[in-house]
Image (cartoon, rainbow, N blue to C red):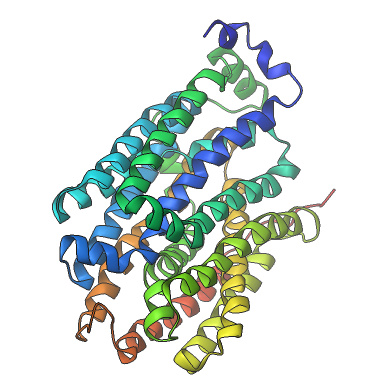
Length: 426
């Protein structure tokens, strides 16, 4: 502890900012792992708790209800409490939830555990983005955010093929209990190593920039009263529905029930989303930082690619050649998830730095509120068909896929209404 309090000299050391970035990135890796892990565990969870598709959607979406609910206050907490305190406290709650999920005796306890995980891990990304905004230059921000999202992609990758192996070795219960223990260790590392600027320093910076310190809810009022915020909020709502409604829940069953893949084969295909995220986050962030004057250009193009991908999936469904599934899901990772860092940067740049956490948390709220809506809704749509040996018939997926196609079109419409100032790229 004494090491931490030596007049913040630790922040002067070479590599400090990247050390902090590494700790935050590992925590964000676990955030993504928990988000999408149900996609390859649907049959195990349905069997363990004897639940329907709608209940499975509710179990999975418990994470997103809590995560969405906390995005607005978490943005405020990140701006007012600081990242160190916010991340440590909430990570501990998430760790308890992960351990409880691994030990859950029934559906009710498992759902409550997912809610605790979502509640706790809700306070990782927004404070981490605020730390990045403080430690890195503005022209580096989207690229660094892309690296952070790439670690989320690694978490997604672990929730695919490696998760299949882990559940075979340790069972899904043992796997989640171990993940909870790891989360505790990372929370301790955050508390011991992350140095916050003093209140005097923060006040001096605000004074030098001509900005006053905002009261608790002033930031939220400023964000929600800004007209340019709302096209991004709509974009994030439909983005979350696509990413978490399909990729985070029904993509695995779709690959097995419609495309005829085994569970390991489906895991390999789903890992392409993770790899696309790992590549796409830094790539699109770099392009938007250095190569274009408006981030909207990159976001609009990525949204158009998603529309085209969904047209292809709805048109072909089970007739998609297995070899084609890999590039299709890789493109989902690049343009359906990696693009988020550019949109976060666009949201941040509308507002002053002192409410950066509030701005990012506000748009993030809509993505996870959407997930909380889309997952149980799509489960209800799936339950209109009868399962056989735990599998849905291929025709059960047709209305769900059409719903996602319409969602992708609305995604493109929303970003078309967004306006931003041209930036000089240096």
